[in-house]
Image (cartoon, rainbow, N blue to C red; front, side, top):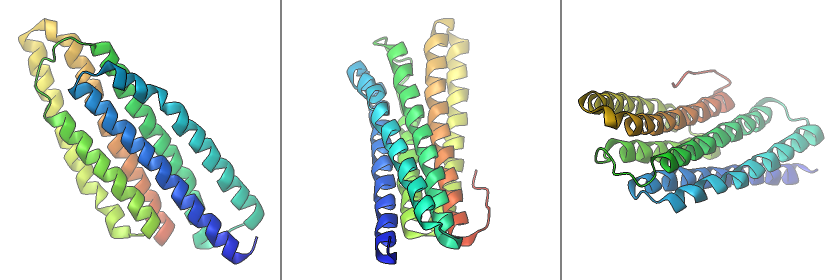
Length: 217
C-alpha cells in the first residue's frame, strides 16, 4: 500500500467511525423519543438496530487490524489508529446503553408517567451534543473541543443527581410510584453513562494528538 493509499485508508476509517457514531446518536435520540411519546414500537426498533452497530464495530475492528498488520504504523499514526479502536468500543457501549433505555421503556409500557419529562430529554440533548463534539474532535484533532467535554459531563452529572432526588421524593410520597420511578432512574443512569463514554472518546483524542493522558470524567 502506497502512502497515498494509506492516507485514503485512514480517511475511510474516520468516515466509518463517524457513520457508526451517527447511528448511535440516532439510537439515543429515538430511545428518549420513545419514552416521551411512550412509543413502544419505536423502542423495539431501537433494540433491533443494535445488531447493525455491532456488525459495524466488527467491520471497523477488522479494518484496523489489517491496517496495523500491513502498514506497521508508528508514532502519531499508531496513536490515531489505536484511538479509533478504543472509540468504536465506547460507541458500541453507548449503543448498548440506548438499548437499555429502550428495554426500560418497554417495562414501563403504557402506564401514565408519574411526572412530566423535562430533565431526561435535556440530558439526552446534551449527551448527543457531546457525542457529536467528541467525534468532531477526533476527525479534526481539536484538543480544546475534546477538553470542553468535561464541563458538559459535569452538567449531565448534575441533572442526573437532580433527577434521582426528585424521583426519590415521588417514591416517598406514594409507594405506588416506586416501580416506575426506579425505571426512570435507570434511564437517567444510562444517559449519564453515555456522557461518560463520550469523555472517554475525548481522552483518546487528547492522547492521539499530544501523547498525554488526561482525565475528563
